[in-house]
Length: 634
Image 1 (spheres, helix red, strand yellow):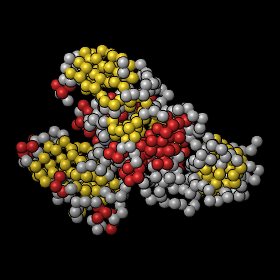
Image 2 (cartoon, rainbow, N blue to C red):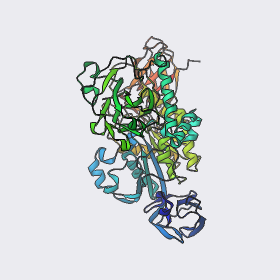
Image 3 (tube, helix red, strand yellow):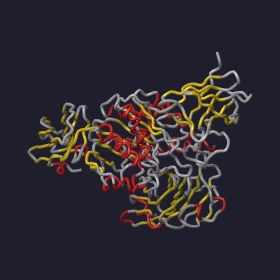
């Protein structure tokens, strides 16, 4: 933005009208003005004079305060002044994650009633627009703003975040600010800053993202080289014999229509998830080949990688959005050119999906080549898994969402962070390490080494099971529990009983909010209540070949619902497929599993994506998925 635009001081969005500033925490008011100009910043009855830097940024530091407001906040210079209206001091919470955190109140259960009765001028909401960036931003690309809770602001706000904040208003008795910064479908990696990436061994990927910000062509070439190396390793293809070469030996057929291949009427593709290759030849004049090219192919679902004349052009980086690529110099040539596109689909429909009217090669004054027809396709005989993605993508990127949606918050004070994410990381190793690294990095940014984090444990989702089976969804629940239980300032909100086997976005978010608030009361407010809910601590063998499970984090004792016994328990041997269901007898804070004459070395509970659970404490909170070894009798 031109420096002239900052002739009058401007406060950053976190300090705009209706802002909530964290009480009892050092305050740093930030904004922009004329470069090198002196700016007088007033907060309450205290004024600080600071000088804007060469880019016009200014920071003014103030001592912590407990005053709830309204409180004066103003920035004044020779160029003018700005004042924020209706500023309060209270507790500020950041809510982040993927779609179950992003899901709006209007899409949750009982939306009409909750929206209609949502007015509370002491509950303020800030919704951060989606944004991604190659390097940490100081300013939001689209400036968010604070809004008092009410029908106009609540409807499009995060349901889980709103219900948590509303619940905390009842007990904290101070103004509450809730900031929602989420992106549906995102893995945890895009939310991790550069320091967190280095901590988990992803420093090279983070550096590649930064390179992309400085030299996109160089970054694309480097990423393409990694992809091509991966392909040759996985398939055994020799260099020069890969499918992206212009003279590929694959068997090509005409594409029936632009759109999902599931709709082509080709039986082999009716339910196909994997890779399909596309090919299109174009003829260019000498003038066109010398022009700077921009290739638009529409939606490549899920992800596409493009070559022209065997040379890499790029990979689609934005999920479910039309793709456009700048063609590197020297790729186009006079006469015949061959465009090759690899599309990988891993969920639902896939393919080169258009729309047709955006598919073209734009060549500036040399005109354009329409690409809405003339395509051929070949189904990959080998579709190896684990294809590398460009790290500057949105939902699967490396630090890109942190850079665009967390970094611009600066060093504002926070009371706690609510995190609802993990669905997109199921079956990916190392989640606990990534979670720890992310929490450490955010705590560093917000100047609070003890900043509380509360994570929502995955809700039930997936086909119900009739016999014991392996489950990545259940394994993720256990990883989430361990990550938060091992953090002295971590909490967990169970949602295993609030899900829907057929909908990954369950509508019951009021109870999610209440459980988030309960755990937050433990870790952020120091209430003497469980911060994780009931969790299995250890399992000990019994004389009859069964096991005793001891629980911690309980409120009162254990109770069953709709049955005299606990269901969903499994005794397991060493071999794969050796798990079998076992009945659990409740004795206070323990569960007894009777032996069945078969070897048992471990116990599982609720080990499925969508299990039936009936074991609760008196809060009442459910017991989540766990797998623990059985300790032999002494």
